[in-house]
Length: 503
Ligand code: HEM
Image (cartoon, rainbow, N blue to C red; front, side, top):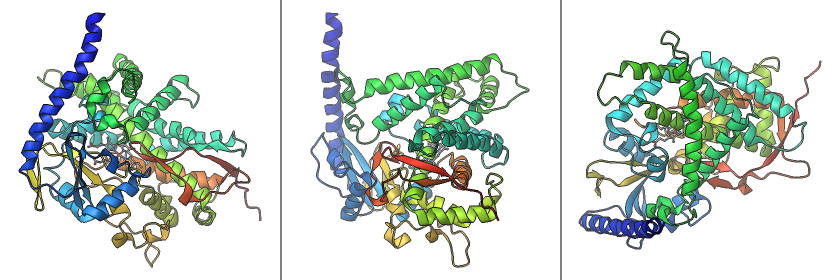
């Protein structure tokens, strides 16, 4: 007992000293380099307050960008981070020189949740091979194909009926849509569908939510990893580990079920395809297709796929309820092109120009990931005139592109028309990068676009979304919450069934 207590006291001190030594060495190295400009910082502490100076992370980023330009430095504890802002700088670093800046730094998420495995957290050859496998396999199981449309329609229909059960009373939209969106990923990965009231699945959703809320840049452990060794759980690290263990147990059970029933002549979902690859690679030394990798990759797809898409649909419903004129226009277009007797399909997308422009404007104006996932480089490099020492954390500021007045004119205004040209065709500006750009862009973009194109029009076709009776919604007053994603604070909404037109 005594020795355990002793260890608990020793660990933070030893780790603190080790970090101090590493920091001194890093400062000495960086002292000789010509680093990008940036705000002052306290040695070893850094300047974590810079990103936390406003509850809206985007405002802090905009202030720093204005003050220091497209490429500036921050310190996360002792660690150097360089923020890359503006489309041209992002293109230069992550597209033209993507090969040099596509590694991932150690971070709370990479190390703690993914144990440097799974797609998010790997780099080099492992990442390349896994990414290729994921893209090919998911494409085979439906990414961008109409075969997936049926599965998404099933989830849309269930969601519409769950909303009907709210009897036009105010309800929290997010939880209902989260289960439906997660079930689309379940269908592709496991061929499973979970009921909205399945207690185990509900718990998985809640734990993932809790985890993502607590591992964003606002958590001091992101800057000072040694804080996780302090007694208690002030920084929610133990909770995060408990949550991840539970979710991985859930994923592990589904993988085991697949292993028991595995038939190589019947490859029906992503897990089957991975198991087949594992089997064929069994005799290869150091195969990267292992059961643990599968668990972490599935976790990657769940974490990245469910939260982002759910958040986007939730913002869309909130904006529709706040902006009745836009909701009216979206509905009129759907009513004219699709009618109300069948669900909107992917074929309709080409004709639903205003609806599509509305979805694009949601992705732009709500900046679901204001800062993309962190990148790093594995050798010393230069960007423009600045030295970027190996291991620097590079933060791509997506918000700076999606809100650049030079690109959009009036970025603060919510205006779907900006994506429609004078002839009424949809515009796709290359600066529209909510899914990021370059070789490490979002692997699930096609799936996300399909889900948004099928869920949002179907919801508007069936329901009119309104704020609770006696209240009004001013979108400028609605705060977002910044975890890993930017999502709206919990809100209630009414869904009123649209009357069929009789004439
Ligand atoms: C509206 C929905 C979504 C948005 C806005 C979004 C956005 C992004 C962004 C900005 C990145 C970071 C790129 C980087 O800098 O490394 C990313 C990566 C990723 N996304 Fe998405 N995403 C969405 C939906 C999805 C879906 C549905 C899936 C999967 C089923 C998914 C899977 C991933 C994965 C695995 C990565 C990591 C890729 C890598 O490291 O190579 N995302 N996403």
